[in-house]
Image (tube, rainbow, N blue to C red):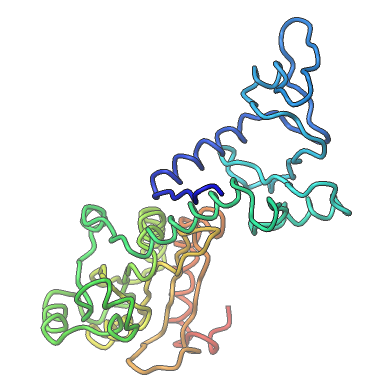
Length: 324
């Protein structure tokens, strides 16, 4: 019996990069696989040996019937990304499979080796899981916080382990931090912006640099004053209530990294409320979610959030009471 192989994160990333690179450069295969054209005459290879034409095309395994078929890709898919591939041999309804794969990034059309997933699918899964872990356990870059002009503060969580183990500790400040925050920041602004790492530092780093300028511009165009923008390390959504109680803004909003999944680790959300306070009901919050390059683009989200902030102030309402 063969010994089980183990891979560290670097091995997985390297292998997945090779797989995706090969998929991106491989010729389209709408039906049974055919050798890539090469100069000069070609001859079939003996059974069990790789075809010379396939070797020349970088395909070192023999062709098999019912080879993987490339599914249509949604129009907004990034051109440099690998296309979804149908791995199921002889599907009863190939068209339905391809339609589903074009409509969702979920893992559809995977196949198996006996009772186990194929090696390529397993590597993809482990790489996506590693990316999600990176998002949860890594900190937002301090240089980025400074570059964006955010005032850094930290919740009562002493470290990331404590923050992850106790959701409540990321929803409050220590007394010393609260006093310092109140002394350093503008009080009574119409809009208070808070950025928090939440459960995805990568979501903050990927989206906030494009979202924040659009948001600032949109608020200025609507004549709204803005308080001291904050970055809260180890922050949960409800930390916005503590900020509102300290600084007294009309609208407080928090841009926060959402819990990553196996499709993306970049999803950011914006939670907003009119004159929020500690202990407020969750239905009083308005949420703009799925902010990232394949969802709501961050620059577009920034303009939309500014529009919502104006409506909150005009109607003195938020959450379920606000009609958008």
